[in-house]
Each structure stands twice: as C-alpha cells, then as structure tokens.
Image (tube, rainbow, N blue to C red; front, side, top):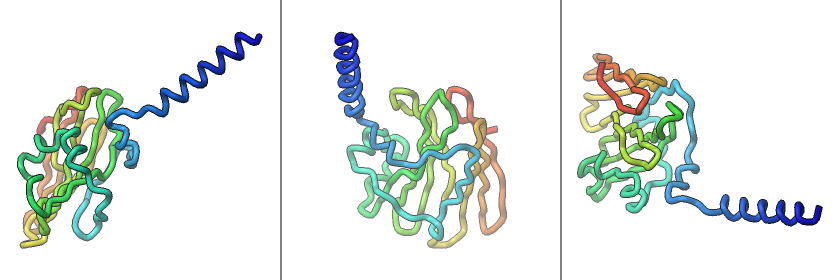
Length: 170
C-alpha cells in the first residue's frame, strides 16, 4: 500500500511538473476561442485594440509571410482577435493588422500541428481615408462567405474550407 502511495505521489509530481512547462505557443491560450459560425465585421467603429504581438511572436507565427512586408511600417500594429474553432485537424487564428492609421485588415490563418501555414484568407477590411471599401465575413466549418462593399454596393464571394485547412475560392 505504501508503494502505491509513493507511486501515486510521483505520478502527481511528474504531472504537475509537466503541466507547468509551456511550449512556445502557449501565449495563444490567452485569446478567446469562438465556435463557428462567426460573423467578423471588424471595423474602426467596433474594434478595440488588444495586446499587440511582439516581433518574436510575429516571427514564430510566420506573420511576415502572411502580411508580406506590411509589418515594417513605423505605425503598424498587429494582434490576435480570436481563435475560431473550425476543425480538430488544424489550428485557426484570426489576426488584426493596422498597416497605417487609416486601414484595418483582419486575416484568418490556418496552421498545421507544427504551426506551419496551411492557408490564409482576409475576413474583414476597413479604410477610413476615402470610405470606399469595406469587407465583412461569416466563417462556417466548411466555408467563408465574404461580402465586399464598394461604395455601399455589396458583392459576395464564397470560399470553401477543406478538411485539411486549405481555403479555395468557389
């Protein structure tokens, strides 16, 4: 009986130590998880800027590949909005990017289990310089329905989300 208690104590100790260790992506657990469908209508009127990602976190999440040079601006701000629960097969993250003071871009990125980028898709866009273009989206388990408003004239584009996380235009 004493051996069983000692063994249990060791198991509890090992479990506690292991659970205290964090991986390099553990900071993602600080962001809300949303179940789909999710409507993303992020714009300057309704967006509250959260904690911004450090350069190290941006590199870790491969954001320079996603935002292709847009992270270099002096006034650029990038953060995580939420983690949509689209599939058990991959991890999804929704980012917001202020490339300058008059544009706001929201991007969905799907990652594999090693955080390699599978694919990405813009979800929302707002610009306040000319107020000519605005984009909103609804994320479903198997699709994204994006609505673009150019001078208040809406047009809809549908994207399919495949089981492996790839996103294709319908």
